[in-house]
Structures are given as structure tokens and as C-alpha cells.
Amino acid sequence: MSSILKNLDDGKEKSIREIVLKELRTAIFTGDINPGDRLIENNIATAMGVSRTPVREALRQLESEGLAVNIPRKGTIVKGICIEDAIEIYDIREVLEGLAVRGACMHISRIEIRELREIIENMKKLIDTNEEKEYVEVHNRFNKIILDACHNKRLISQMEYIYEYLQSLRKISLMTKERKLDALKEHIEIVDAIEVGDEQLAEERARDHVTRAKKSFQNAVVK
Image (cartoon, rainbow, N blue to C red):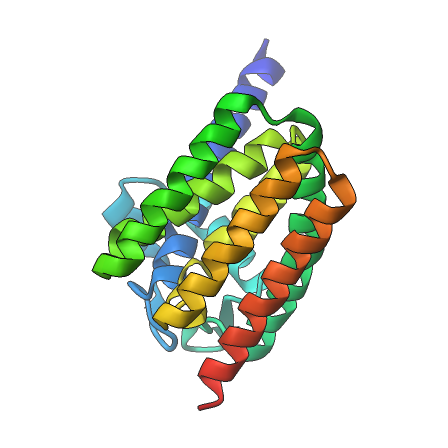
């Protein structure tokens, strides 16, 4: 009985750690926590109302992901996202998003296809009215529908992290109206391929879309 209770306690602690980790990651990705900021274990634990153990584990995970670094006598410092890291993530996204779209071809429903079409129409209006926040929200919804339709739990988990990571960079890769309109055309082409069930074409178009997003990001950051 004691070992069972211990396992339950361990599971609860792990769950708390994941919550803390996600909150800290999101804050780094969105810029609420900036490069150079100190992540003080006790302060975070107090602010989130948790013990120091899950916070400590979350900080170690951020270090392993390259988002923070532990400096002697200074503690854990936010490293943030560098250009090289972002490019690597785009390269990984290209491959995995291609697989996700290929999987969606086999499982997506007519209702989901219709919703994707409606989102595209909504995107057009939001681009014209320059409503950035709403545009990002529907853009994220578009990605989620396709991702969920691939029916691959491990792939979904990996892609959710990548989308979260790239969230703060999307303002750069989609900073111009021209790029937004180009991305919209690419979305239409992807949905067209998914709707007819052409797995190879859908994957090619998805990978091309990510390649163009990466190029847009690179062009923006070198200016």
C-alpha cells in the first residue's frame, strides 16, 4: 500500500512539474520573461503556490532544452531563443508537419475540412483589417485541426511543443501583409491536397510552406 501511495504522490509531483515547466516555457516564448532574467526557485514556487521541488526540476529541464543556463553564484538565467535555435526548430517542424499533414489526409473529416475553409475565409478578413491578435488565434486553430486529424499522439506532442516554441517568432515570420497573403495561399493549397487525399502532394505543400516561413524569418532577422 505504501508503494502505491508513493507512486501516486510521484505522479502528482510530476504533474505539477509539467505545469510549472509549461508556464515558464510560455513566459519565455512570449517575452514575459526576457533573456538575462534570473529564475529564482523560491520566488517561482511562492508565486505559483507549489513546493520548490517541481520548480527545481522544471528549471533543470529548461536548461536541458537550451532555454536557460545555470551560472555559478548567479543561478538559473534565461538564455532565450537564438537565431540558430529557431532555424533548427523550423527544420524539424518541416519534417514533422509534413508527416502530420500526410496523416491528416487519411483521417480528417468533412466537417473539419469545412472548418478549415471557414478559417481561411476568416483569415482573409483579419489580414485586411490588420487584426493581429485574432489572426494569430485563428492561425493556431488551423494548425490544431490538421494536427489533431493526424491521429498520432507522439507526433502531436512534439508538434505542440514546436508550435509553442515558434509562437513568439510568428510575429517576425508573418510580419508583413505580403507574407500573410502568401501564407494564406499556401494554406489553401494544403487543404486542397488534404481534401482529395493526396498524401504526397499534401506533405510536399506543407513542407514548402514551412520552408517559406523559415526564409521569411531569416530575411526579417538579418535586416
